[in-house]
Image (cartoon, rainbow, N blue to C red; front, side, top):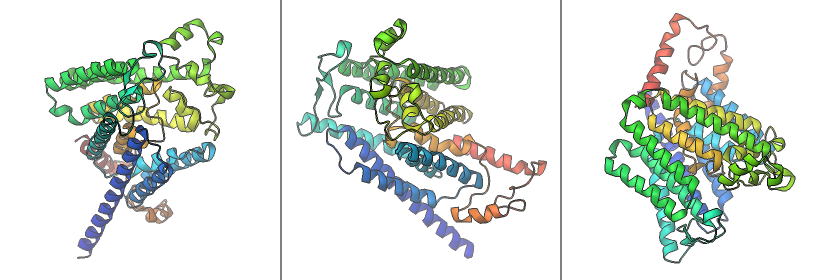
Length: 431
């Protein structure tokens, strides 16, 4: 009878946690949609605080192993130092959000993200077409062939933002629905990719959309490539190369007359993304200005995502993000989440030249959702799950029998059940 009462109590606690999580998620999605509109949201800061508290409530009513609690606390300390150094709270919000996803079906969550975001973009487009809010065409200043041309924006501010949102939703849609997609669906997405370029003239987004679509199709249809290692290793190498290029760009960025000619040519191909790093007081986001945990005065915006990541949040938080990115790519391969790998790779490569994923808006970075789904499988964090208020007692038992039955013991053959439990967890996650 007592066990039944405890089970019912735990179910109610878990249900409360899920309600808090989805309420916070919907609030974050609303913030993203309002940001994309031409309306200035005066309550954005307050809405961020409410969503943070909702995710924190979910975290507080979730059981984690001692190692998982230590991982959360460690990440929280690093994010807290980032907040103290840079005055940016999104690092703390991101840690709480990712940790709170334990026990949540990430595909159900991403379906909510997909449909709510798609609906929001459709509403903004309809409002712009009706002349109520926003502009249909972006006739602002452009670069190269875009200069002085009319480009479609459908109420989201500018054509580049529209193209990026379509890329993000297409990538997410393929991840969620690729198993049900027929050849005609892949063809329609190809037509969409070409149409987006024709309407917005965003070359960079067109290239990443096309590459993502081709890779997703190949991984979906070819079991040989899907089960091989070439794409996974090649993808990680490409991301590493993109990161090294970002470091060099941050180092070399300057006025055109002070950069090597070959860098100037590359910068023109990239529509000024390298030189824009420097084009602020005191050199902006150049490498020599980076600090361990950011700086409150670092508020400049530029396109290169990894440079912005290290400039805004600091070297140590940025390095931690890069390590987590590669661990996530590896675990996607381990768990045979091939389309998850494609999504992460697409975002990782795009972040080299576009900072869409590096912002205060958590709900537009879909990599965070996969990180929330897989972080417990990325590191050896096994053990019996306990509540946060049981932590002092669990650590007090150091050297004796702990809450997970293994704390303080040497690794022996008798501990093989823990390995088996971890393997079962990974297999369950793969499903």
